[in-house]
Length: 170
Image 1 (cartoon, rainbow, N blue to C red):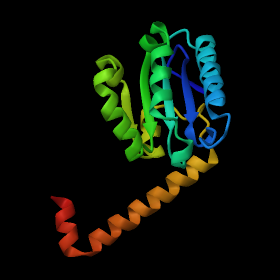
Image 2 (image 1 turned 45 degrees about the horizontal axis):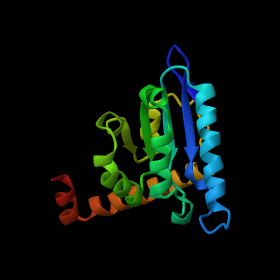
Image 3 (image 1 turned 30 degrees about the vertical axis):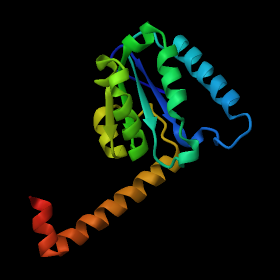
């Protein structure tokens, strides 16, 4: 959790890599209580505008929350919290997350949909929000570094091949 702006508005950081494994026998119970904890924390922290940063990188599929859970969360968040949410930033979005959000877009309000932003790197995130009060877990930092190294390698390989470089520039 961190803050931004003159009014010290909350930045809520949610790292999916720390969610419980869906193979747990008490998975539904744990997720239900996690949701209640998150909502009660938001109720206490959020008096004004706030943003949520959802760190998706370094999260195996079995730890990602399911569609049903996300839908229930959205429906149970009270109107004031939905209204005060200024931005829902998804860092390192997977194809699964993008697909879920694309499929659910017709069922959620256009106001909420417009608040969703995809960010591919921590460097992009730094351009959007002040990071001095935001803690990013080491596993996410490492994931981001590895992803950036792969991207640079792919880009340098493309730029060394004249045919591919010309395709990349188009």
